[in-house]
Length: 152
Image (tube, rainbow, N blue to C red; front, side):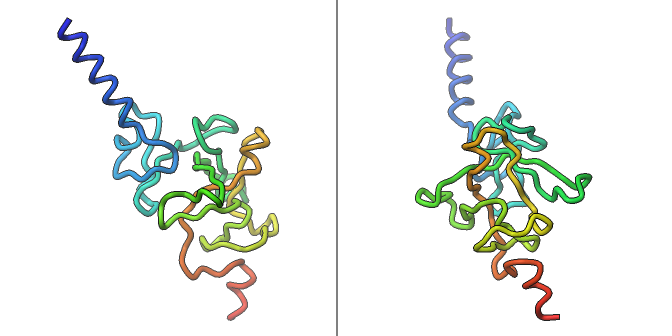
C-alpha cells in the first residue's frame, strides 16, 4: 500500500510540473518530464515547444512553419497562440500575426508580401490558422527587406 501511495504521489508531482507551449525553460525536462515538449534554448528565457509538428497536432497553440521558401529549409514548431488583450505574459515576447514577422526578426505593422514572409500557421482549424503567436522579436530590426536595403 505504501508503495502504491508513493507511486501515485510521484505521478501527480510529475504531472503538476508540466509546462505549456510558450512557457520559459532551461531544459526540456522543465517543459515535460516525459518528453512531449522540448525546450528551445535559442529563444530568450527558453521556449517550451514541439519540434517538427504537423498541422493541427499541437497540444495547445498552433503549428507554425518557419523559413518555408524554399521548402527544403522549412521547420515547424508549436507556438503559443495569443490575443493582444491578454499578451504573452513574458516581457520579451510579443503577440503578432506570423505574416508580420520580418526576415531580420523584426515586426512589420502590415502583412508582408508572401515572398518576404518567414512564418505561417499551417493548421487547418480556422481558429488556429488566423491566430497570433508569441514570439521574441529582434530589437531595432528593419520592418521589411526593402527597408533593410534602403540604406544601401
